[in-house]
Length: 245
Ligand code: F6R
Image (tube, rainbow, N blue to C red; front, side, top):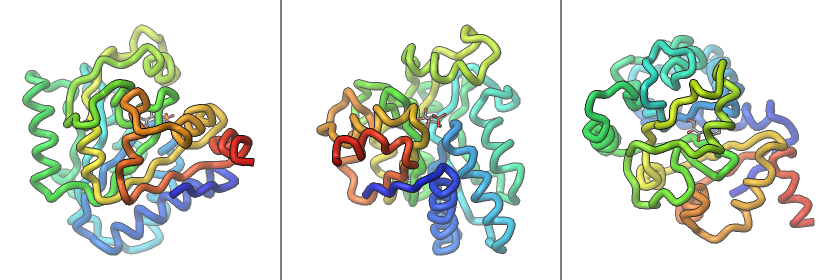
């Protein structure tokens, strides 16, 4: 299902409301979370809603999609740090229920397998929140990633390193590898919400809309899932409207 709103603000409010509803309906829910610019206003909205609405977060479990290899949780560009800044530090969540891949793990392969196992051990993800890269990646599953993949180490594509370079002082500081949940882990979620905003996402959203299911476009895997909502602002939907007009 596609939902198109006029503004980023409306997209963020809608998405935050969906997350809140899930938490209220099932306080012991397991959420799959994403980082990135798109999610900043979503978390800001969700934090505001959670501050207005007395909701018990003590049973909530979260698993983040991905983390750079080589960055510690204290590194300002790590996804762990991002989540603390935008979400976890603002809420009273049980820290032992918060999970992110460990980019400093001594044995990355073992850490990856343990991450997928940990998601399964809690009964899977009730709701997975996703952004989308300009190359169609979800999590850090770059084009040609197997749709059967579980948590794994990826070499980041040049496009992704350029896109994400905006967060780093120097392009050379952008890590070359990351750990990401696999596409199979994502597809195992009971429900998925993908959010895309801004004109810079218009091309990829048009490609996704018209694409067959194809490993060249990782987000097209979502077409195999029966409970996906794609939430867009007008700008990200620009080329959908032109083509469908
Ligand atoms: C982040 C993630 C990525 C981003 C995507 C879009 O945890 O998994 O797939 O969602 O790169 O990033 P922004 O929102 O910064 O355009």
